Image 1 (cartoon, rainbow, N blue to C red):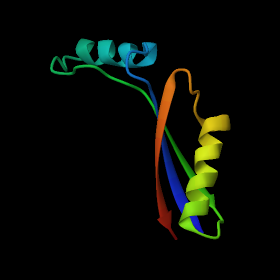
Image 2: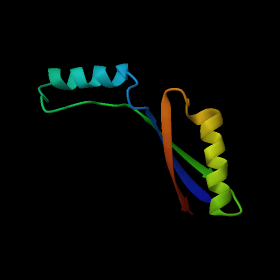
Image 3: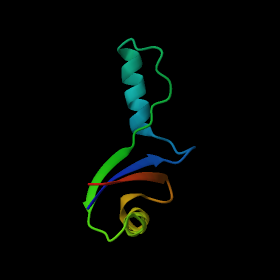
Image 4: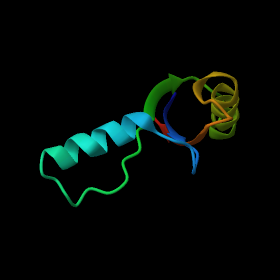
Length: 82
């Protein structure tokens, strides 16, 4: 059994209106040192696989087909045996 943590973020250069809203709110709250804010997703998945290589292949496929939009998002992931 493996625990997979998938991190999905906007690609560089893609506008992030939610991040801008949070940045503006933080500035309004007097946190003036806050720079760019980007919002992403963290997805935890437990999967059964014969090996870590099989798990890695499965997660890559999941990300490409469903978990990340390849046009505007990029993803990375970590796998831990549990």
